[in-house]
Image (cartoon, rainbow, N blue to C red):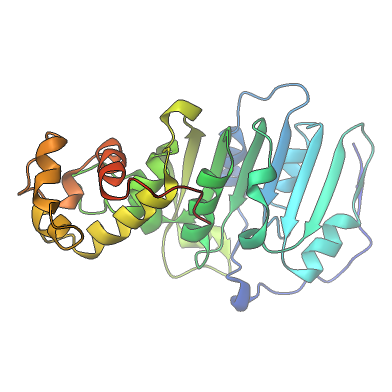
Length: 275
């Protein structure tokens, strides 16, 4: 496979786009390997390829389609200028991942990317909920956010992001990455997580209700559950008993499934996706 690019003198990372380019090949290889096992004809979408630390390794997997979603003008043009001598298709989409139509992505796509810290949380929130049958996603994000995504109920890091993502996918903390692995180095540690989509029957049936419930409960996370619910509805203190939950517990002790059941009680008429 041969690649050719006509563009020279790549620009420095842009602070406005939260760019920190991975510069250690061994780490890139570990990240891409998390997409294993590869299969014939797999389709891969990479978010923010930048200079291509992951992209070249993804091309070497010979996917049937490699879709690159890049907001930066230079790097979008750079990847569009590269030709590859095989039967695979490379698509370069010059656009913002936050407005990408994730709901149109079919279930067999694998997603990967070193996500800018400033958009990682809302972007993952959208991806897991809007793709109807999420396959696999591998993301490099800020370590603190990775810990929140993977936190279990009762942990200090457990919050709305934890519950939302774990309502749609299993989340695994894979490994940490020090600032020195990037150019320029960020001021914080990074980490790689692996998400695998849950079966459709395990996904929340009322996403909007769940979103509203999480906002309510974690805005008042130090309050007892019965007290929180009484602020929303006159019979709020009765709801925990109907769900076999103690009204004195605090939100961070509830499992994702508990929150889904609670949402159905609090907002029985709410429906539709949350974007």
